[in-house]
Length: 280
Image (cartoon, rainbow, N blue to C red; front, side, top):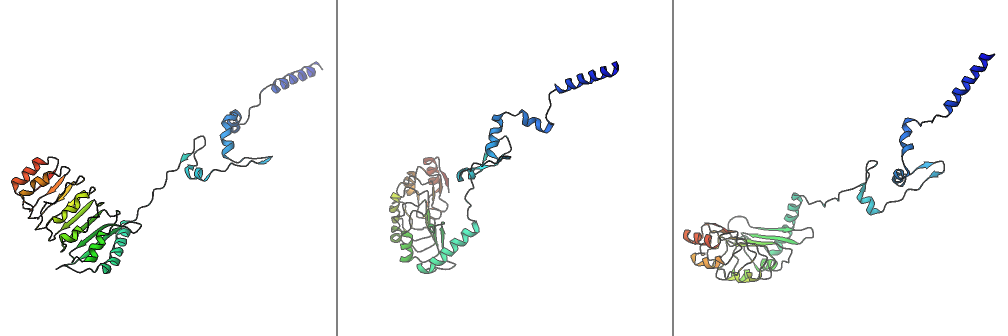
C-alpha cells in the first residue's frame, strides 16, 4: 500500500512541473508572434485581409500613383516606374513622307530642268506638315518657286539652291527668311549684290556661296552667328576680299579651294582669323 501512495505522489509532482512550462508556437509562426504592431501596419494597408469578421476594404490608389508606383518586394518601398519616352519616327518613314510632300509640290511650282542631268525639288517636313528644309537642284527658277521659298516660315532651318539660273533680284526676295540657320546659293550667275539682305540674318550659321563665278563680297554684312563659309570655286573672290572676310570673327571653317584668293592671301587670313580653319 505504501508503494502505491508514493507512486501517486511522484506522478502528481511530474504533472505539476510540466504545466508550469511556457508553450512555444510552431517554428513557422514564431516570426509572426514576435513582430510588433508597428511592423504589421504597412502590410495591413497594402493587402486585403480576410478573417472571421469578413474582408477589410483596400484603399484605392490615385491614377497618378498607379502610373508611378510598381510593386516591390515585401519590406521594401515601392519604386517609381520610368516614364516612357516618345517614340521617334523611323528614318525610312520620314524619307517616304518627305518624298510624298515633294511629289505633291513639284507640279504646283512648275519644275523644269535647267540643263543636262536630273533636276530635283527636295523638302523636309515635320510631324505637323511644316517645311523644315527646302532644296532646289538643277532647275530653272521661276516666280512660283521664288514666291514659295520667300513665303517659308520660321519652322524652316535651311534653304539650298544649287546649280540654277537664279538672279540677284530673285535672291533679294528672300529677305524675310531671317530665321534660317543655313543658306546655300551655289552654281548661280549672281554677283553678290543680293547679299545685302543678310544684314538681319542673326541666326545664320552656315553660308555656301561656292561655284558662283561672278561673286563679290562687297555687300556681305557682319554675321554674328556665322561659323562656316564656303567659297570653293568662286573665282570672283580675290585677295581684295581679305578685309571683308577678316570681319567674320566667329568663323571656324573657311573654304577657299579653287577661289581667286592666292596662297599668300590665304596665309594672311589664317593670321587674321586664328580660331578659323582656312582651307586653300
